[in-house]
Amino acid sequence: MSAGSTNLERRILRRAGQAVVRYGMIEDGDRVLVALSGGKDSWTLLHCLHALRRRAPVRFEVVAVTVQPGFPGFDTGPIEAYCRARGYAHFTEPSRIYEIVEARRDPASSYCSFCARLRRGVLYGVARREGCDKIALGHHADDLIETLLLSQFFTGEIKSIPPVLQAEDGENVVIRPLCRVFETDIRAFAAARGFPVVCCGCPVCGTQQKRKQVKALLGRLEAEHPGIKASMLSSLGRVRHGYLLDPENRHRRHGLAGQGRAGAVFASER
Ligand code: SF4
Image: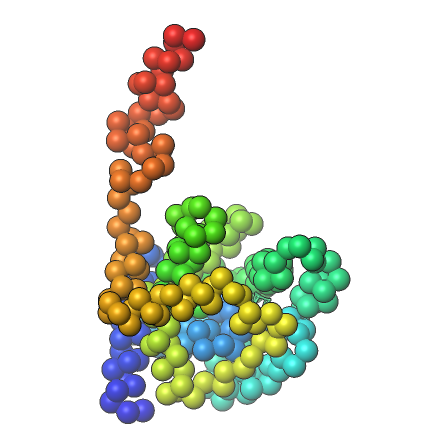
């Protein structure tokens, strides 16, 4: 690798390592299941976790799984061959995701959200079966800030993608070690390393209009005002609750439970 790409790798590893430590993602003895779709993000994630494992002060295992959704044309062969050549623990998990989405999806609902829910279900089951303590996903910094804007623009909420999430099944814990790594670095790194990036073959891949528009908007803003994306990422960790419209803020401010003093007065006067 060239000096440039070595610096790039250092930067990615530093930011991923900081995220792992800051959010307490990995503990001694953990077995981490990496969701390896074969895209640039999941390859970079797998590479990072193996590199961090070699230098971490705690011991942890990394095992990668590729969920085969059954989309026509999705070939897991190059993924399996690369992992075998690198000596990475990896297996392919068959599933009926495509068949189920096609047969049961409500046409008015989102293809992606149904597919993602089924995929999560497969991953949670695999993690339980394989005795994995954490499930690592390849979401990166751009995913976080795009989701923040999408939530504000289209659902009227301020929220994004958490770095660590206790899954809804109450058992699995999802971690996102690339949450502070920007996509431009990941794209350049995946190309420099020559990861065998494969397309998932799904019928809607790359067609999510709103996300594409938000990504393009952020790209234009970043070109005009370099540093905007970094500032947005940083804002996700520095929420000033008292300057938002959430009524819960009143309770935080006064340290009061329930409706607070004014609420109690109104209630007693009823
Ligand atoms: S982009 Fe394709 S593979 Fe990804 S969640 Fe949507 S439907 Fe599923």
